[in-house]
Length: 487
Image 1 (cartoon, one colour):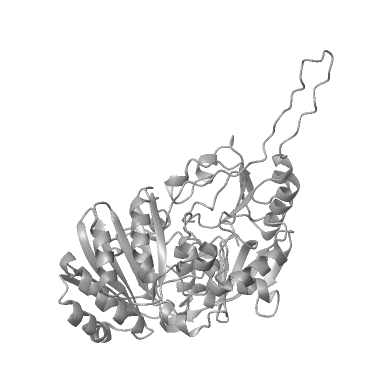
Image 2: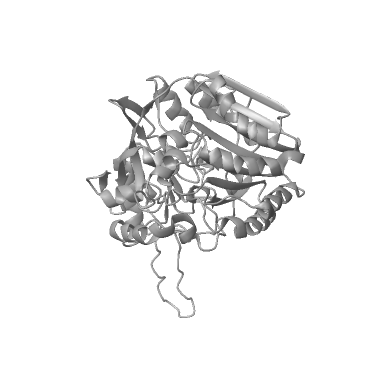
């Protein structure tokens, strides 16, 4: 069973990024109207050679071999963006050198971990600071220390060798930095919390080039902001230390129903999933794709199949017998491969899964849909096109953290909602999001960043927005880090 059959689609959203002004070399010729008048001095562009000499990592410029690969993100929709340079930073000192360079040269800067920003904000037209070479995964005394450039498949693999893991997501090539900084909804969140809930400390290079250790006692306000305040806002994270949990065999499952059962599945799942025992995580996917219309509930249970059967019984009773059912107990690491869509792939193949062109929007659902909302959702998925709605259960450990304890504010949400469409058109997304807003309100998940979302500050951060703005002013008063939806 491949998780792509479960997800049907990956979930990352594109929109053409507005061009940011770059600092490029220009020459100003003097007017020749006045005979003998000297030419005005030529203004120099950034001295990239000076930066290259300061790095232990690698600086890639447009004329260099490998530039086309270096500039690419996960989503091909952003292939038209051409950074002035990409710096593969090998150390925090490299990041500090890059930030000093852009401050003096007036070059825009963007940080990149996995390159999965829904809006393409992992790149830009200035300097891209890529932290992928800082990807070490270590474990000692119940703590996992992970470089900011590590991707989830390698985090899971590295920790599995020690019989431990951290709560995280499912997409194998997502960078741990972006996931953590935005909160981190994942497949064991109901038992162990969000990724940011397991975060005990983080090292951040701030706009002035300092490398700060941040935890509950040191730079506590920045530590708080890094737990759900969104990537790219406050500095460049270079490493994370997480509280790890021991692993054991788990049960993965997938249930399918015919499309005629879609409304029944939504009604039953939204009442059942957020109230299930913490050990049970599930997601409901309504899909209109190449294989037709499909209703799927899948997930992971931290226990054995017999106990899972008893927990699934109320859902099956409410919806009816599924047309297909799969449940299997597997080692934890194997379950993460299945959730990643890599059940038939090697680790190396999973690391190099293909790119996808898509667009997406989101809601955070604080209440259950009534009859009208259920019909609106099912009707939207049924419209012509290739698209899906993905609902991931919350509750459990996520809900037992106070809304102001971390920057992630959506502790009372029952589940997250992601609207996904193949290609770059946002027509279906906008119509469906607007149709569901009267039912789910205006809450959204910053890791599903939405370039055309109105009222995004309140939608992403709720009551925490004002405190995040104060942290931004304290650590980046000149706003070196600028995003279209930056704090």
